[in-house]
Image (cartoon, rainbow, N blue to C red; front, side, top):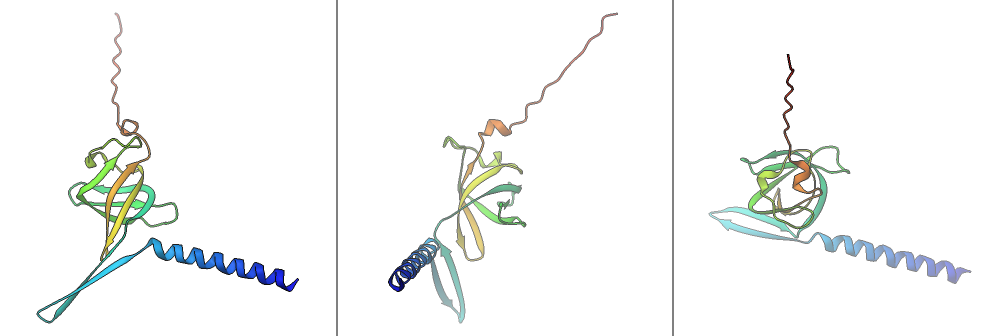
Length: 143
């Protein structure tokens, strides 16, 4: 009986160690320190990470967008660059200017110091789903 309990505890310990090692392996980072004129500066960059959420604000001029995830009550600010790729669910490229608030997205980002920079945004619906179609109805009455 004691040997069976020990085996279960050993298996649980191995599983926990594997899970802990996997969690640590997902977020690797590199820190570079430079010293110039007696002033030190350091830059930290991490490997690519993924997220899913809904765009709450999008600033085409400011290169900033905020995304609210299902696990967070406050939106998180992300920065995008001219190299940021936006695609629809089929993989077709979409202009970044097509992004609007309330669009559910999946995104890949890296961390550069205190800034999170989005490298890829994938829309969860085709862009035609979000386009507004304006219709005009005209009624005429006969005398």
